[in-house]
Image (cartoon, rainbow, N blue to C red; front, side, top):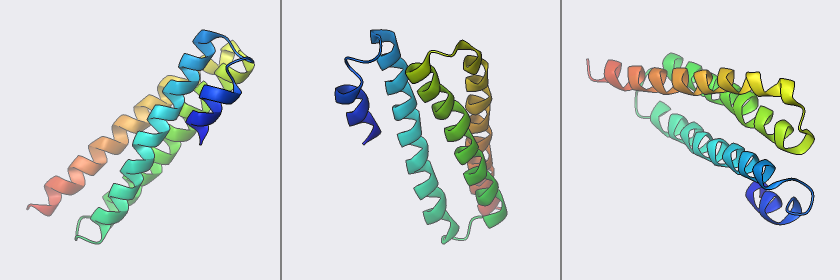
Length: 108
């Protein structure tokens, strides 16, 4: 839905660069929403619920900080929001590391 809004509803309201930024936010939000579904599925397969819970939390934080800051940047062009984006990227990486750790600990 956000992608369609960006492609159709924002075309006349924001710059081409703003549309690219918005699309990046949509893409990363979608990837990590799928990762949240994966975490839910893996939790019933015996992987560490503690690690998976932390991974899910970091994915959510990443979506808020990374995608959220990019949405705001694209829609408002407030530049001070930009430095928040890398914090979201770090949250995504921590989430993936925790997911991998949950998978590795399952095999022990």
